[in-house]
Picture 1 (cartoon, rainbow, N blue to C red):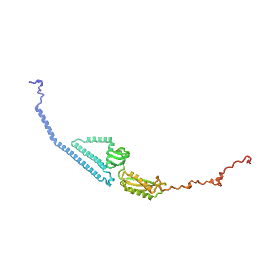
Picture 2: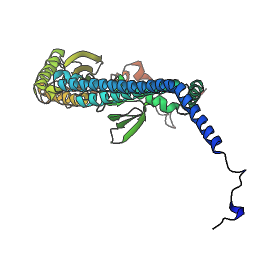
Picture 3: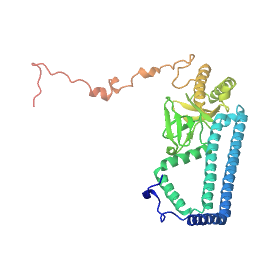
Picture 4: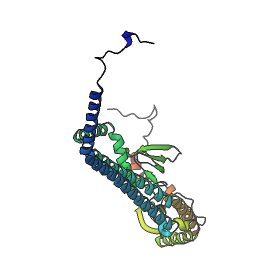
Length: 362
């Protein structure tokens, strides 16, 4: 079947096969030439990038494993002293474990950021990318974020230093100024406290200007006893010593007392009373219980010894002082003597004379 003339391609529009083949051959030659000239450079860049990535990954893995091993060693040493006499003076194992894990997490994150960030910059430099605009943009962005989130940065840095310096930990009773209570959680941004009434305080680490830790080291129990000035100081000292010896041998006070109960001496001497100060070194947080027990036992011991405490009941064998018999006698008066000038001056005036009697006229 013959094709219509309109559908047949014109001879002028038909590409020359030799020309197309020639252009294709030239393109292939140019590509091959380009690859031949640059393959060494590409291979060098690829190997350099691969080497940077491998070294960065290996270094990151080694650093993280070293930090993890260090943290585990710290936890092992904390468990070794737990339950010993030295462990009572130090923080407990759980607190040290949490502190070491927090420090390890921060160190691992910082190490990963530094290693991977440096590797990324080296890869970009190997690709012949100008890092000046990127670093300038990152600097501007960092400054903007720093100004916008300065409170967050302050809280984070404060939390890092608090954990590293071991200012407080879980289980400690602290006074943070804005709130006080027992620490139940320590974070890099927020510290969680439980108050005396059971409330929970969320305190930002950047808001804490000063910290009073009531659970580290040891505490002091102080008791002030007011007695009459006439009491014997030697008897008072003997009574307190007897109470201290008994208290130090009984449980659980033998563990809560970390030092002998001492009579510090006279704290105040007045006309009607004198104050004797008693002190003892105790386990942290147990000073108030020791003070209450000391007051209880000292009061019982003084009552048994007949030593009167100001404000307490008098001893049973103490007799009340006899009343002064002259207290009810009035002071002598000059009017009691009829011959005294005061009595004569107070003599009543005689009544006037009768009507028939003599009169006195001028």
